[in-house]
Image 1 (cartoon, rainbow, N blue to C red):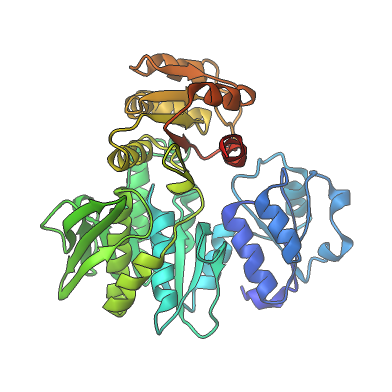
Image 2 (image 1 turned 135 degrees about the vertical axis):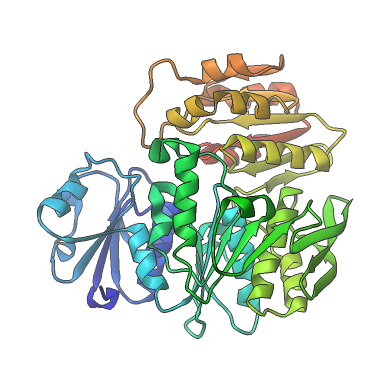
Length: 455
């Protein structure tokens, strides 16, 4: 299919992070763009300012007649949209051209040097770091990111003179199997999305299928411990900040005034005194992966070093909201037990002598059920826990699965379950030292309110 044949693009779920990047891409290519989403958000507000027409009711009468022409309109939808959605069913029943977000991204990637970064966690930060390095280099890049990169205040980077395309390869709904990678990266394969894959082995099988899609002259880069679980006839490079046997590794790592300094080593590569412009030990690992990708793309080592220092992070990825001597507040998208563990340990390393108060909103009933004990262990690393109710996203409630069940499993005494309306008064009464908010639901709507309460 040739995407250029369509003059009108209608996106169902336009406010999603991946969908909004596609909306921006098509607007930049002079297409008329409109869409539906469940609720207004900072992302949809930006899209409307940029020229998209958006409504927030599942109502066919809200769709402009100019987007009902079957010949010139492409309908794009996300798997997060429920199957009962009236608009989606109208377009299906009336034989419009419908494509999933991942299928469209796959079509865009066909004539590019596709650098696809996958993993159950870490992929957004690694993708954004990689895009920043390449964008600053001679070859430049295009990028579709799963978060808002602070350097660009966007999830999309466009450069019509570059063939490089950095994409976040999402395993949810097996979306990454629509890509055609030239260089593929896998950061992690922890059990997740078991509502899609049934079990951990099913998820690993999907990652192997992703590896099998790499171009015959392509390259695979994986975190060191994953190499034994993946098979490929292509060159496989490994990275690890902790394993000296990895191809790309770190030495001389130091934490100086809250900033990590280290040396990056690789085959024929040595970059000394690298300074990371964003907090957290987990981001040293992400920076190593991004540096390895850029080096394998023949990027200049001085640019790699400078770009890692100037990279200012991604919204909701270990992001400083308040940084004062009397109070620190960080916000993180972590919503899987392993991500939560890494996030908490990173913050504790930065502030070893301060009490860390965590606010966590579980995401999905099924994920809470499937990883109940793992969530309990990770959250117990906090000094104080404020637990919110589960954010359902696309799911209906599961009987017996709720935040109270999780709270009772967590082996710590300083814990409480609160409604969102009670959060800020409680926080104010506690006089916290370090606040860390965690979750992938609508907890992001509380960030500015918490910030305002403590300014």
